[in-house]
Image 1 (cartoon, rainbow, N blue to C red):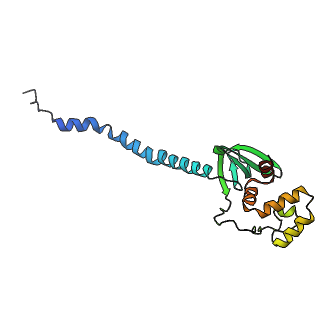
Image 2 (image 1 turned 180 degrees about the horizontal axis):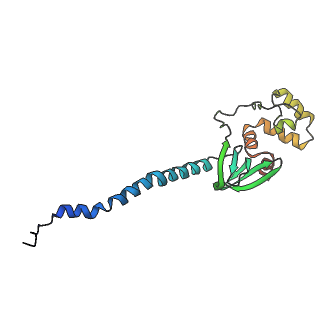
Image 3 (image 1 turned 90 degrees about the vertical axis):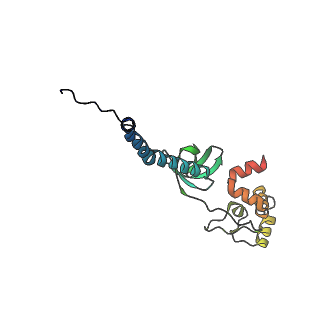
Length: 182
């Protein structure tokens, strides 16, 4: 009796033993997915939404660390004003952050423009030598007094037409003049 009796191996226990070695690997993958992959996908989705929502007037921070105000959005590129009369062309996808968003104009445009919050008049009022809160009669009088000045005539047309005023506010003076004149 030197040899012990042989017992039949249980088939179910050997199957569990074979796949039991894979269980830690599956657990590691699940932990990896929830701690690394899923948050990265969420960040990417949020960044894409932020980049698509950038519009003129937003204050942005680039990946290089420059802070500036968006003055023009054109497809995948935008112009950022980083200082007085200093504009930089930048790719939209390379923005790190949008710091301050512009107010969305949900209300319908009225016949007379609303006065700006700041003390400085809008450029089309400035061309006529008026303040933002000028009445319609003051605007007409200033336009007739400067009828030989093409800038004043253009400013008067811009004040009178809500569509032109909205376009001017969206594009800025230089791009508005280039769009309207050419």
